[in-house]
Picture 1 (cartoon, protein in one colour):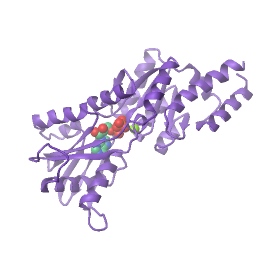
Picture 2 (spheres, rainbow, N blue to C red):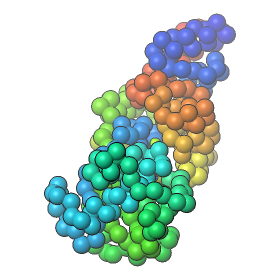
Picture 3 (cartoon, protein in one colour):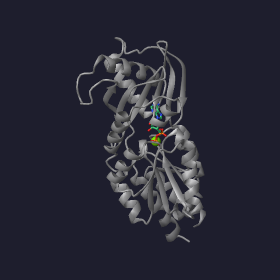
Picture 4 (spheres, rainbow, N blue to C red):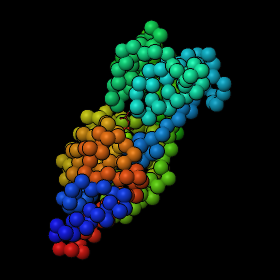
Length: 306
Ligand code: ADP
Ligand code: MG
């Protein structure tokens, strides 16, 4: 394509809500054959809600009035999560403020807060050592997880929801269950990508059960789950090693390295600045159908004018 054609293509993209960093980006968009999609915030809305609380000893039925133990659990976890920007953290903090905050919505103070990217958070709340995060994160801290808790987690995951585990002073204290919804346009976007001959892959730090449920809902057959941020880069490299030309679509801090590694990095305009900076293209509205639009645009740019 001539430089003028590339400029025209880039301009058309901008009109469609597709911000292309440089004219050369259109070339890589044309050759892509695999589209790796992050789950939370990319395929799903990323605005999570707390849907249930199971503190130790609390019955498993829901929804129902929280027990005192549930109150304490949510307050401790909410205080800690108020220091994190993660969609899970926002859901837990909002619920804690709503139900258990002081009149001004404030939560107990936290000392020694630590964010463990892609795993969870930790710190001291009211003199107690609190850990909140995924199953393996608590297991790594030598927290004993009862079999019935693991069974419940698997059940929750199969429903497409995410269990968030809490430990207080090294002992398992309960599970908070969060969920977000698949974006209305995601299933159609995936079918458009498939029509363009592209293979969609779902890549997420979330657990396998939840990931498979979401993948099924939007029509993705290939799932890579429980991926830490560094695993996301490796997953992209592995696909490239098999000869795939990979577009990676993501929104989070944890996607940035994978976006940079991919042949084409696409960030959600609704996502973090770190992701947007690492990407070649930004989809302003966060609508996945724009990914298919971008591929169509680049193909058109290269076939009409030579
Ligand atoms: P995704 O790839 O879906 O965007 P992340 O890589 O950000 O997910 O996180 C992976 C998993 O780590 C989450 O599903 C969750 O179980 C856990 N996790 C990460 N951050 C937090 C947090 N602040 N609080 C609780 N759990 C967290
Ligand atoms: Mg994400």
